[in-house]
Image (cartoon, rainbow, N blue to C red; front, side, top):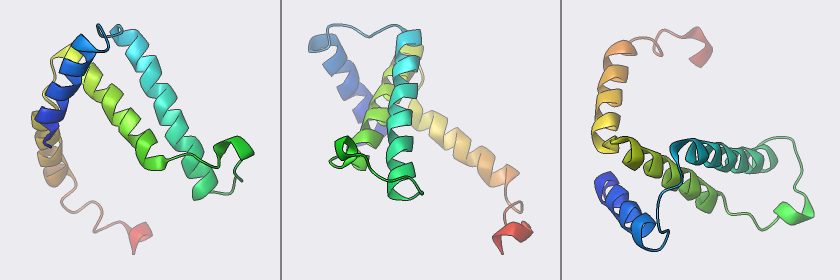
Length: 108
């Protein structure tokens, strides 16, 4: 599935099953909540925190997909084509960071 196809599928789901989009501010808050869930898993799985009993069955991939879903909702609501936005962002990074990381002593 392409990013565009995912945006279209999410829009269809929202307008049928979901009834309508939550407003942009609500979806921004939901996005932060979902990112927090990813952060919690990362801190426990790859960091120094231990899992709580209630966290043992969490699924990192599913939580990342939740982040992507809400981000695509916001893109749909604000008229952003995420495919084009990502292409432009990668072009910017290619130019801006062409030598930046290669010359970073911390990465050697």
